[in-house]
Image (tube, rainbow over all chains, first blue to last red):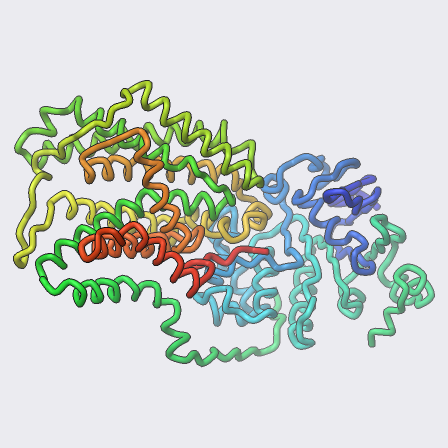
Length: 241
Length: 344
């Protein structure tokens, strides 16, 4: 792989007495969607949170766009060009949808063309623009969470389970928006449990188990090999359809 | 860019009258309490005097407490030393007024206000600077440890009180208000102290300014968002630590302003006056909802009004009236009147 946007080299992360990441190696190519897969509790979310700096890597190195960000504080990592959509969405409930978006536009006023694109991807955000974000439905909150990351162009998007707990219609909306983002050449590292979405969006896949990366390759290779899926994740992707 | 989503026609939920009124209930408590006061105190002039007095007291408590509620909401810091800034503000402000004795004592409203303004600026500058040092030396090492915060900030308060004793002496200092702010005006048969009216105006200006900053500026957005979910604010690229230091300094400066006003209100200042005020300040912060400036404002008005009404009707019950108010409000809304939704 030539010049990846993000590289993790032997990253270890401890949370209290628990050793969550135990030497994670990962390369995220530019302009592609990289899937991070694995069963619950294997360290996918911890990997994203370690990259953004919410949790510190105790060992190893994280390179973003050629720069070592392992020890940088979270705001500096974000300003280097990382957009983060956490698993819990991280919505500011007491702020309006508009205020959430304005806050996410770190470098200045929101670009109107980009906002139109976001509204076309997520129409409810336009409808509820002046409403408190806490009053949105779960799906609308997720739309806002992703829209907030998309409000400015980022070098890399870290997105943690954007379809979790959502109705199928909303999942389709999410998938289309992410596909849109991908078609613009964005680099995305996506944690996703919905394998249909993973298969539709992913270019490369990385499978984790027990705090380590146990397999990396093309998403197509993984999605076409039920035996491999069974071996890596203890289930077959086709079992979900 | 392409259009991605299907047509979407969300429906707004139909809210009942009760649901629509719920957010305004805390605001309605103030006029309700004023109306109850009017019923309990039949003489209109006494009621009016007590109401203005209660509002003035509430405004000063709000000024002193507003910084504390933001500090708690933003960084989860329990600062028992906040009263130190009230005391320092009072002593520095009064010292400036004493130096400017001629201006303060002159029968000229303009000169008196300039003297008062300079005293307030001096007090706020001093408490802002002390607040910065307090945060660096005392608060920063104990982030995330509530018990340590309580112990170390109480220790800081004691140290500051003793420093005041060293600098200004152990005796309480009696002061007189600027000449033009002495006495009262008569309105509808009620004597309204001029100084209390000034306190009400200053309180309203501070509240309006805080509302403006918090609602209409980006830094205000960052503070409000930070109170709810600091981790996410940092993930967007904002250095919350710097914002917090700024809020701590501003909160300390406001406590200093409150200290000057509280000192002039009581016409006597002591090293422990800030510590004494902390009971009321904490009640206001708790019943308002930790981190909520609006809740703090309403809570302060309720405390000020109730204290004055009850002290008139049954002086012995004044002390417990605010505790009873806190208990009742927490039974009604355990997270305070206007709770800030914190990220889990």
